[in-house]
Image 1 (spheres, rainbow, N blue to C red):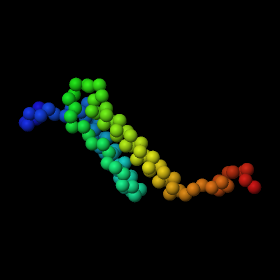
Image 2 (cartoon, helix red, strand yellow; image 1 turned 30 degrees about the horizontal axis):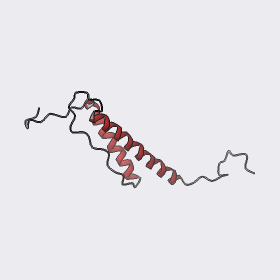
Image 3 (cartoon, rainbow, N blue to C red; image 1 turned 90 degrees about the vertical axis):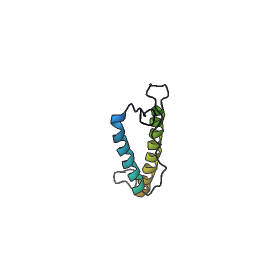
Image 4 (cartoon, one colour; image 1 turned 135 degrees about the vertical axis):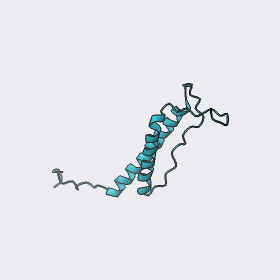
Length: 99
């Protein structure tokens, strides 16, 4: 308990949390570098009781974070494809079927 008589937030993966935060920051930097103003990742929970509840707030957070990564990754993939330019039929050097 804290001095304010509040229960502390219990994070079952506290040892990994800083690594997750660094990964989020790096991904956000990639988005900014690509010129995207993508929404913020989900906020970390502040209400875990530590009793291992079915549907723990950390499980919901991790699911939301994975969805955020997937959506941001799709955006970066589309950006990378657009930067390379469209590939049209016949541009490949090893395409021997084109005469």
